[in-house]
Image 1 (cartoon, rainbow, N blue to C red):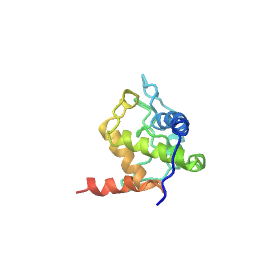
Image 2: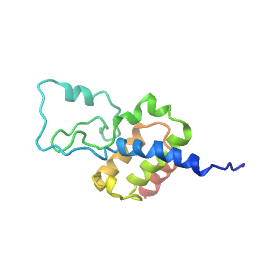
Image 3: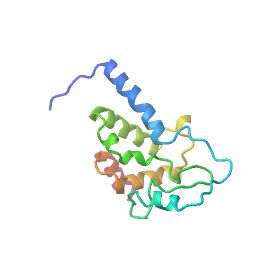
Length: 146
C-alpha cells in the first residue's frame, strides 16, 4: 500500500472548508426558541414525512418547534446530492468530525448544545438512513451493542 503525503496547506484548506460545514450540519449556532412555533397548515407533518426514517421511526426532518427547530439537531441536508458530491477528502473530514462530536470525543463549546441523548439519536438515525457512512461508524455500532 502506497502512502501519499498531504501538505499542511492542503490539510488546512480541507479543515477550513469542512469545519464550518460540521458546525452547520449540527446546528451549532441555532437560536433557542423563546416560545413554541405554531402553524395553520399541515406543513410540519408533510415536511417530516419526506425524510428517511430509522428502525425506530425517527427522522432528521422531525420538527420540535417548542425549544428548537428540529427534534434531532442535525441537518437533513446530509442526505442531499450536494453533500454526496463533496470532494472525497472534505467528505472524509466531515464524517470524521461528525463522529468525533457525536461519539463525545469532541465536547467543545461549539457542540455543547448537543445532549448525550441528541448525540446517540443522531448516530442511530444516520447509521440506519445514510448510505456510505465510513466503516468506523458501523464498527462502533457493533462494539456498543455488546
